[in-house]
Length: 318
Ligand code: NDP
Image (tube, rainbow, N blue to C red; front, side, top):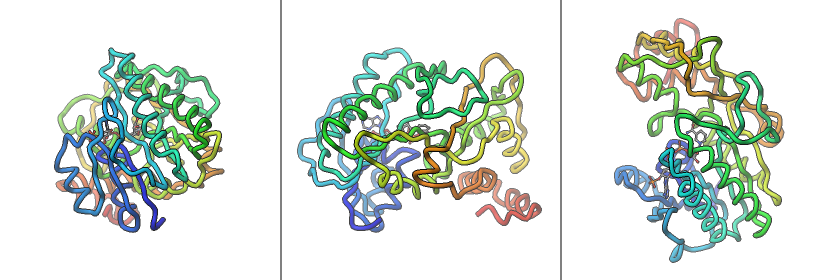
């Protein structure tokens, strides 16, 4: 993709930051956010990304030009777990302001989440038409944030005739920000803390490496249309969280303590039919992707990871 004028929210986040950095090479990229972390803002600017302060809870977009060709809306206010009204308002209003401001764009991509599904069954492959109403005991306001914004996106896509795609992301990971859920779990392992897993069986997810996120964003923009298109967005493989923990332990030598109890953070696997039809397969396998991410983020384990991968003919981790 080249020569486009691209607006990105959530550009300091784990998902959108690598996209902003990659697209800034051949396009004019603008990132909006509060930039509580000034280092992230500076780093983006040094790569040629333009930045502007915008708090979607309070600010309109006056003063910002309207001639963006592509919009990636990745910012989220996940809420504090208690105030559902404020969580719904911030995500709905921020999304509405953005879509209205950029109504002349060629394509609008909203990053939603698999957390919207009513995830009653650990083994079910969730389809885009499945029941909504997901509960997230770890942050109850989060599903409401996403469901509310999805509604706004759906409505304004048609009202404004703005070609739109909503992508429900599974679990993204890679060497940006906190590294995603796998790296959060690995940090728990390093701290000697137990990792909660189900009493029986395990939770499954579709890990998506940020290299695939970066590659697939322009493909998703191409898939935008009116009425808005909806697509599950996850990695091809179904990865057991317990398998993931044990694999990270084998790669690094850091022991894992499994806490088999009544509560573990639930995850879900997707049916990939719609995504495969629109943008094809992923390119990064989860085992190689996790090894590379660990080696990037935790230098002290790099030699050991390389040796592990070499011994299995999988090449070096980096
Ligand atoms: P992060 O938590 O890493 O980043 C959140 C981003 O939102 C930051 O860039 C932050 O920017 C921005 N933001 C938060 N509040 C506001 C606000 N009031 N005004 C403007 N910007 C705000 O998020 P991720 O990168 O992990 O997630 C990106 C998107 O993907 C989200 O929509 C999330 O729901 C979705 N998703 C992510 C998954 C994952 O595995 N990471 C899984 C499923 C869905 P700043 O602080 O500078 O304002």
